[in-house]
Image (cartoon, rainbow, N blue to C red; front, side, top):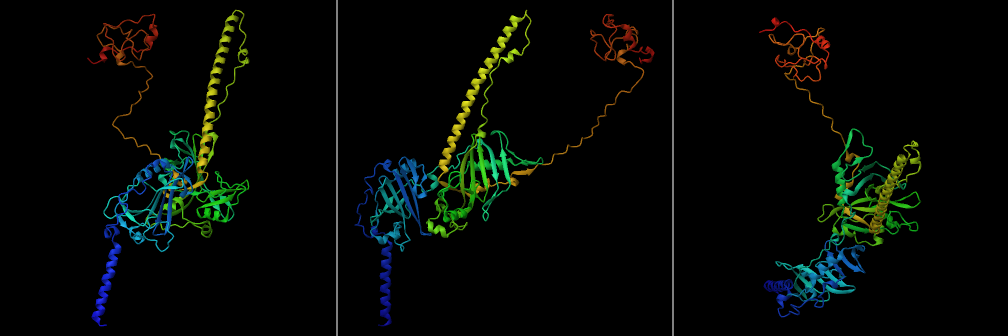
Length: 591
């Protein structure tokens, strides 16, 4: 065989290979236009009523980690649950109705593939397939159920390029793949199917916050006490106060407000089942001994079972404890765990590990913090207690009036006996009426107090039922806003401002009048020269005691024509004359 022949053979082989590759990469419908079986028909013509659906299941395969990520919501009896997330309660009726409605009447479009060879290219490999060799090209499997019956079951593959809302779709038991128009109203985000508000607390109702910064001595199995911070207020309009704050310190009210806001905003982003035997008050039941794997799991998440005074075990956290008391006596106790990083699935349900795998691992696997889609989160145990003192003291019953209260009065005289008896009867009637009114008010107050206690106990029971079987995952930023110590909440008072020095003015200080042993009459008391006023009887002035009837204006000389002699009956003339000096001669006054 010469070189020319070999070259021609290579060329032919290359052309054939290229042709096969091109054929394998093109949609079968375009290559086989005559194969259009069932095009235009509905995938599930029997499914016409979306209210029949009682469950939805979505299976997603993660190509990067080769992990199957299921999400399922179903109705069991009258309750909606999320089986894929430890049977956590769901608000599923409305969400499922939307999803079911969007799947009614889904039709087959053009044929895109006819065999299993097209599955990987179109992304419609069953995510539940056992074939370990076909990890690429797996789609999402969506199943709508009515009990154990499948109403809708589709594998949804890649989106059709340059098309809106069009996907490659096939039934799990069908080898033909179709192009289908889909507008599915479905979310697989855990928080969209539940009540995400963790505490459901009213910020205005908070009356007391306690921060206990303790840690756990793991080797000796005991709690190492740290600093405690207690914040209180009497009403939602009163300022927060800290116990034990020094006179030169003041509370950072903005930091306390931030804590209150963070408590109100705590959201559930993931759940975990509580270990077997751990009660709502975070104590182990006496007949349950925690397994080694249980203790390792808790320790890896920042929690430890510590011997308690009653010789039992109680769950504590290395991150301390925060409690919040409301005006109706509900006390929330929060114990935060360790920080971990993971994607949405890791946060919601954790890694898919068996119990045997957990025994050998001390920490839940996490991804690097900077990896795309990863978030920092923290674990959280919540328990609820009832504090009746926060509701207020029990109303005091009024004391009825006694006969001794009326007998204590002295007996009246015989002449006033009838009148006194009447007054006594009236007083007795008044006291009895006041007592009866107070008694009715007491009964109303007592009934109101009992109602408050009953409602608070009922709420505590409801919350403990809610928190009974799970602990939670919250966003790490929420913990940071709540993790406050005394140093974060207190600051030194600003020094008092010194008063500014007085600015000197041109005003001269008022000087006291000089003391003179000889009384000198004011000029206004002297009559001008040439008047008809007699020197012996000058008009009264401010410096001269005047009779009450005198109405002359002080400081102004009284004209001679209008002056009136002082009547003898209003003032003695002699003292008046003695208190005023004889006016100086007329020659001393300037003309």
